[in-house]
Image (cartoon, rainbow, N blue to C red):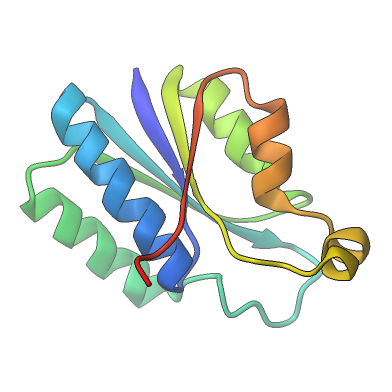
Length: 130
């Protein structure tokens, strides 16, 4: 069993990570951090650098958490998060959400929305404090 967090290297991802880590501590279960980006993107500010991923792993381990990080180039980010949750038998997925315009949703879709609708376990959607 595990808690899966869809992590992005921004304040939305940090909010999701904070909630997921808290929940993993409460449930005394493994935390699986998924930081993925599309393989066809040349630059993605939400995809963490390798050094940042190492620091993240060390920080979470120092907090006493068992942590696994999936840091991958993928065909579809939502599918990668859902697949990780299925493979890890997740009891919860945590995602950070951001405000998007209706046009932005139409043109780009929404990873968080797809995860919420297609996941096989409960999903907690969080946003950063104001």
